[in-house]
Length: 126
Image 1 (cartoon, rainbow, N blue to C red):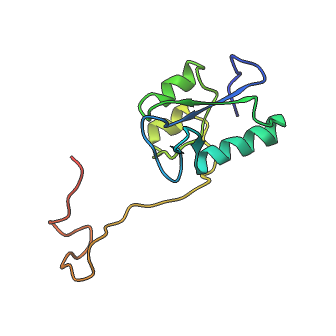
Image 2: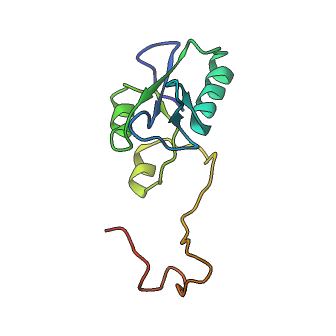
């Protein structure tokens, strides 16, 4: 499942930090420590796979635009992050089952006259 590491015995996991704090998935606390759900998953996997107690897991900051190329260049060994899966990604990546499911929704004040995502007043990304 994981590519052969360029640093045997060390699992290098990508994180979207520090450029984009993605609370509660990955963020820096006031002391600069990496915290969050994805960080916890990475630590759990390192402990389960390598009996790691903290010294073998290296959390590396990457952007969402660079993480796949970093994986293929072997700069990182695994991506543990929120990610929208595309058909192109399915063809080139070995994807796990999702460990967290989320969805997009429209949120408006209760008294709003917006009737859902088909309402022409709903803004859509360019």
